[in-house]
Length: 229
Image 1: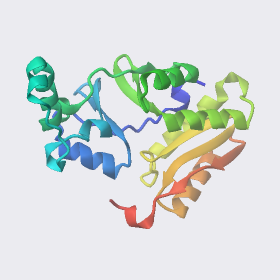
Image 2 (image 1 turned 45 degrees about the horizontal axis):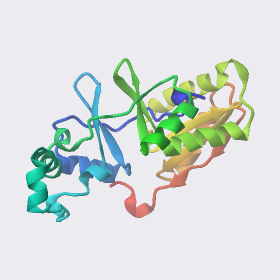
Image 3 (image 1 turned 90 degrees about the vertical axis):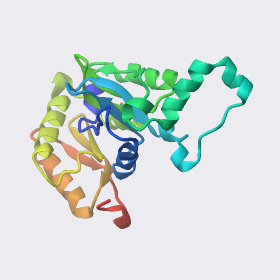
Image 4 (image 1 turned 180 degrees about the vertical axis):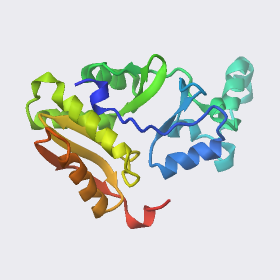
């Protein structure tokens, strides 16, 4: 398996000028821990994670440094001030973003996540963002691979592409909350559905794809009090 086989394609992104409160709202609303920052051409220029927003004056979490340490590291203090007080995504984002290509083997993706101590890695094609692989996506891919022996000929990839394309045409499909992996003709559904009806619809959609041998539903359901937020 490679990155394209498990990556989430419907990636929530923000622009460099997106306000910090709007970024925070998106993280909460979409139930994600980070959001890539892309320019007008779709090229990734940074990423904002929950950690980037942990020390902010609005929440009273900024830390004042001692005066003598400030004298020794003026430039660092200036950078820290921008990070903690900036009003736009471009001010608070991490700029040194590690990325992978679509054909990067999952073993290499796992090594990057471990060595860099990061939770997710964007997938790019010629510099443009096409997906993202999180630790959960990686584990889902590995779990699917162990469930059934992989079929030759790349048919699993074709099934996944067809299913994602079919779901993309459906307004009810929660593509921002789910992921799909396929192994040995078995479709595995991961993530969160808004209702039992939505879970059934996802199963039916998967079963309608030619070549699917079975569907494994690993989906959870969004609690009623969080639906529609």
